[in-house]
Length: 311
Ligand code: NDP
Image (cartoon, rainbow, N blue to C red; front, side):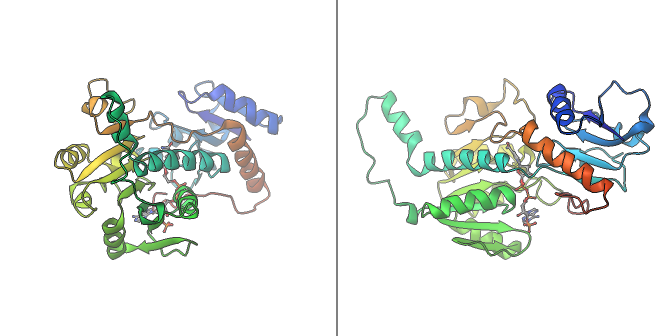
């Protein structure tokens, strides 16, 4: 049994070391150092060149190095009948909670206005603008591993939290909605909207002018899902007309964000370089090892992806 690490830009040697520490007997190769393609039974993948996975005739499991698996479905040659597993990891979830809480509180506490005031040496406590957490409405698009964890913490902090998902949910402290009508309700309520959806056929371009028009005037957007959720020119227009006040973006259609991109200089856009939550190789190697063990013992695998739903 051989594991191939197919992730040229994602520290493959560190992953190889961590996995070998867990299972010294596992044969681990780093692409392109493979002698016989038919030796490969497992592949650990991030941003791989298209077409390689389909050249591995004995591949049994594809592991994504991240929680998102949209990168696989861009490859039209993705082999069928091979199980895909993704990352669900408490460290990844904790980091996303930190990111979402940081940027939510920044908007809740009017921090961009305060920073502007500091530049002009203005002393104004903004008490006319500051509201209590219970009166601040926060909406989540996506109530999976990440959305649910972030929403729960904000609810515990007494914010009014709404969540939208594909299937119905019951989450303590969070008003949960699903489906088209449910989306309308969540948008109407959300002064701060946070996108933690997976990128799929259904969610591509969901953050568009029509969606923004349903938010309360002057709403804030935080997108830590994927860049292709957002229609970039619609965001710029919504900021221009005041339908949105500010946006925090961690993910972009093109990454790294091109140096000449208008988002860099926009006074109402905060950019982070896709670092909201980064996979920890040591922690995540354990679930790869566990799934390899399970497969050998014919036990159901953890964190499998539904290919039809693309997440
Ligand atoms: P999950 O698969 O656990 O959750 C996805 C959520 O989205 C679920 O609640 C699901 O609904 C909902 N959803 C999916 N499709 C639809 C739809 N068509 N309509 C309504 N709701 C939908 O994913 P995670 O929470 O683990 O991760 C979410 C995404 O976050 C990843 O796919 C990735 O793109 C992004 N991410 C970004 C990172 C960063 O650093 N910026 C780091 C890690 C992840 P249901 O519950 O009904 O299935």
